[in-house]
Each structure stands twice: as C-alpha cells, then as structure tokens.
Image (cartoon, rainbow, N blue to C red):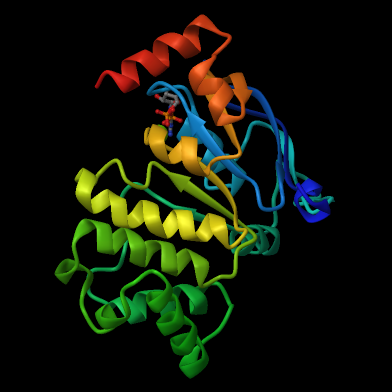
Length: 255
Ligand code: ADP
Ligand code: MG
C-alpha cells in the first residue's frame, strides 16, 4: 500500500443501533483506508444493511460517530443538521439491492436529477456528466430509454452511475446483485471491479464470494451486530479462525 492508501478516509467509531429492545449494532468500529475495498459478509439479520445505512445516516445510529478525512461529520451525531446530512450523502454514495430509479424519467434525467437534488450540478453540465458516466458503465445508448426498457442489470449499472454523479469519496453497495440472474449480475460486478481498479474506496455487502476474493482487500464477517472476524480474503476464506465463519462460508458455498 502506498501512502495515499494508508490514509484513513472513513472512520466509524463505536456505531450502535437499537430498535426498541433489539440491539442490532453493538458498537461497530471500522477504519476504511483510501482506495480500500471492504467486503462485508454475514448471515441474514446480522445487521449488514443497518450498518451501511448508518454510514450515510439513512438510519441514525443510537450512539457512535463518523469521521471523514480526519474530521467529525457531525458536531452532534445525535442531532445532525440538514447541511451536514447533505454533505455526508454527497461524499458517501450508496447503491441498493433494488435500484430505485424514477420510472417516469429517462435514464439520463434520472442521473441529472440526482445531481440537481443534491445541489451538485444542473442543466447541460449535469447532462455531460451523466452521459460520461453512462459511457463508463457501458450504457451510452440507454440515455433516452425509460428504466423499464432496461434489464435489471442495466438498471443497477444506471443506479451506480447515478451515485457516481455526486463525485463520492466512498461508495457503499448493499447486495447490489442479489436480485439479479447470475449472468446479468456479471455485468454489474464488472462495473464494480473497474471502479475498484480506478481507486474508488468501497464497502460492499455481498454474497458473491468470488468477487470478494478477487476484489476485496479485506473481508469482514458480521454476526449479530458485531464484526466476528476479518482479514484478507485468502486468509478468511481458506483459513477462517472462528467456527461461526466456517459454518457461514460452508452454507454459502454449498448453495
Ligand atoms: P442484514 O442486512 O444483515 O440481513 P439488517 O441490517 O437488515 O440485517 O437487520 C438486522 C436486524 O435489525 C434484524 O433483526 C432486523 O429485523 C432489524 N431491523 C432492521 N431494520 C429495522 C427497522 N427499521 N425497525 C426495526 N428493526 C429493524
Ligand atoms: Mg441486508
């Protein structure tokens, strides 16, 4: 790793989340280095989605704080201001399992609108950015199509382009391919691989173990609201320390 990669870009410090009596995140801490790709794996209900959502405050943590580039994101993490939230969501982009594109807008307009709503760009400038990004995700000819005229994999690539249009420093992916047929998922995984190659800092919740093995610098197993084990993919997949990791990997690989 060079110096740039050694820099901590995003620090999650003791993130807790409770719903009523249910303690879903039990104080998660994580340093994400610039250019690093982290694969987050773990059983259903472990808290993976909740953790990602806490990282850009789609869910508000019950406790803990976020630090971006050495600066606390919120003066008071329990009472974020609107401006702090906007800044955070520009800097930390998110891609969901369901693509959430506006059905009545063209693909191009979807990407333009995201930029406008976030106060990033508008007009012809936003269109140029949108077209460049469609090129980047391999869909330059879909600009004028409606989302319904695109396959699930294409819609997910459009959703990635939409997130990238805000020039995020970190990208979060929550099971981006789990709603897709395997063949179609490949195109999405390729876009994500290319993105990782350009040095994007990424946290990816995924069951795609091959992808995690090839692309991730670190794999983390989340279980019952805690990081149970983490390590480089070759170690975690081939030589897991924890019994829980072994049984989880076995279940996933035997599917
Ligand atoms: P994963 O993504 O690992 O499958 P989630 O983060 O979706 O897990 O969920 C973790 C736990 O948090 C589950 O027990 C779930 O029922 C609970 N949970 C998630 N969101 C909410 C919510 N909005 N209200 C109450 N409980 C929730
Ligand atoms: Mg989830």
